[in-house]
Length: 481
Image (cartoon, rainbow, N blue to C red):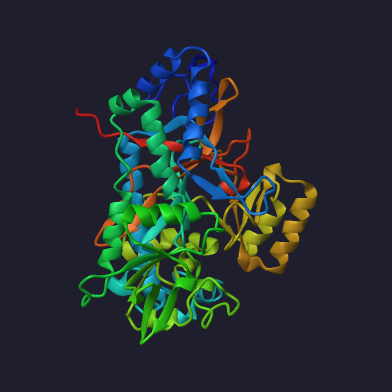
């Protein structure tokens, strides 16, 4: 097997190897281990890791796939390694950002000060597809809206981290972080120990602490549930995994009923009251009497119980407006408004197609930019200009002209790369990073997060639905000196 000696960074920022081909701080132990392996051993370990993931049942459902519904999320054995100083900046930046977005949600649904002060255009917020009029005048328990966030970060060619987008509705993927770690610990046990990697496995405990923090004050022995759309959902493995790890009920809409002003679970012994729901269902489907009447996934009357303060939901209803990709462009201003500080983690420069000047620039430079729809996720509704055809650009130009409010554009950032096993050699593949943030009594950032990797050569799209995979993320403890 070719090793790091022949590995080519190709002028991209590489997470493990610097521009001179030398291992970055904290990486040498891993490099030495890999280079000491007999020929073919690394490929063998990779296959063993994949077999182990399949045996552990770590799968996701593929919509519309012919090869059966479940497959493992492609996994690469070479971890991404982050030194402690990089992590300190990421952690501080995420805490600042989530705090400000939470203040923003509380404000726009109540006093609307930020809109009155014209920091964010009022019509931009009120026209967002994910702004929920039903939440106006409402404060969730403890005034926490975004209990669980998955914020996507990228590192550019300049070595700096940028926020690519915020996910404040039902972010998924944390189960892969926990299970990838188990596999890596078995594959490279000594390297792992010697590298002094921060643990990730307290996440379910922190998640449960946060859910318990939301229990109405007068409830003595609360019942907490995780509300899943069911086994056909692409993240169902994660729903069952997390509910099992926390020891809470896994429920579907059909298992719940509203009676006497409370939400109850149907059990063999009759009705049992539920006090907190960690919901993995989007607003649109959660209550057919308030949102989509055709939804079979939700619970009739749930929103009324929620607004009366008799059940807590994580995440709160209405958080989607804060991860609208057009609102994203204003987050640095939002942070400044609520904290008085500049953003620790910058945004990627963003053009707002609803702005005439920005729109003209975008339409003239479609071949250079990445264009995104305001509320799409999973890599859908997106044009990657440099990799697009003229026909694709013409279609997007029409879409932007028809509904400019719904689009933003960003320069193509050359995402950092990590060495990845391709056949019998190591090749660089582009990555992003999704750390998970829990907002309860305080704000906790899981050390690391999900490193998603674009497995197609040259591709910048890391989403699992688009053929991406994942890697373990090692955050190193500070060195003693």
